[in-house]
Length: 83
Image (tube, rainbow, N blue to C red; front, side, top):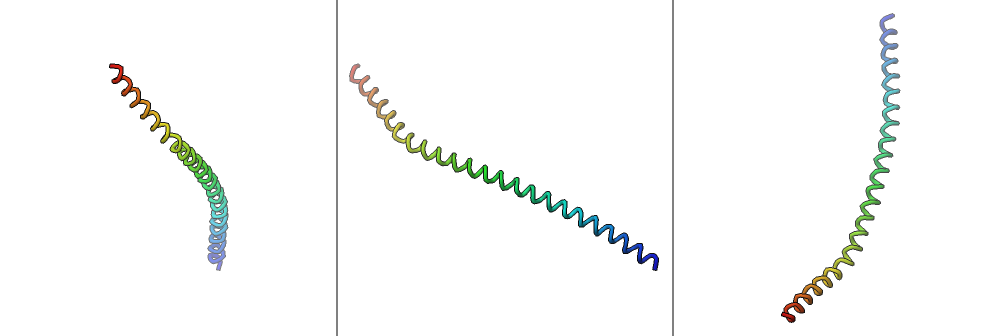
């Protein structure tokens, strides 16, 4: 029966080792998950800010582009008139 006790002790040691490693791994995975959540929140805020910036730029670029084109055509017309 001596070999049975030895086997139980060896298996108990390995079980305790794997239990300890799984606890450490779980803690590390929780930390990584929190960091990933922080990064995704930051990326989402940045994307929202860029989207708002582009919406504002679109509002102002349309009239400005139109005005620039009209002024260019007016200059061409006045140039032809002078010639």
